[in-house]
Image (cartoon, rainbow, N blue to C red; front, top):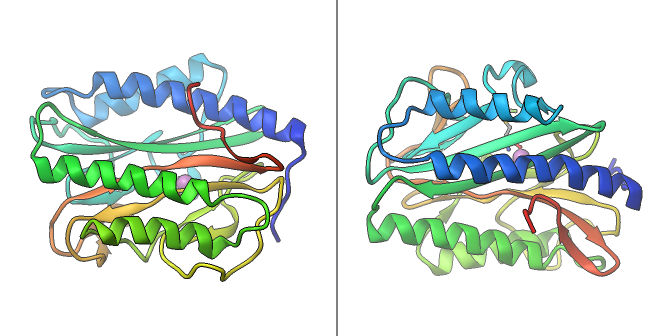
Length: 249
Ligand code: MF3
Ligand code: CO
């Protein structure tokens, strides 16, 4: 069942998502050669608690950290650790907050210092895929319109869309219906309605879309060891079109 949100609930979700957006923005500035992924995690937790919110991921299904931080060939759910970021790495920061009874969820991929042109293009295309998907998140459209828009953008650039992990509805729970694949067919799937709030989150690989989970039971990596990028926004569908809740302005 898809839970529609009232306008006042969407405003509460905007507050939760604003906290996430601010924290991602702060973390992004901190990403430089020499910092460890564990330091970024501790900092994210300190920041979210200072805002009177809870880290959404910590303890969720047993996930042990506040932040998911996925480096290079890690796709999602990377564990923070004493790994030191080095120039040329690309790093996905995925963060969630629980505030006011509602969840916020967003992710970005950022460069560490100077990166290769191919890595930069992967990041740009993934973010563009997200925005193309968001553009289709309007009442009367279908879920497949979002999925197809993401997929078309990514594949036209010669990259691939991860199949095994998808976006999701979000609200009083972190993961609600519907599931939102980043591949699919225009005109297919459920019809989108005002009040739906969707976390759209393309995971895009440089090479094959095939992924595997490593033996920590969480971290997803590319099967071929090539790069992966991830962007996510929580988006409300309103009468006036998509409203990106996890945005700073
Ligand atoms: N943005 C991811 C998601 O929506 C993060 C979840 S990590 C978890 O699925 F640890 F909370 F599962
Ligand atoms: Co999510």
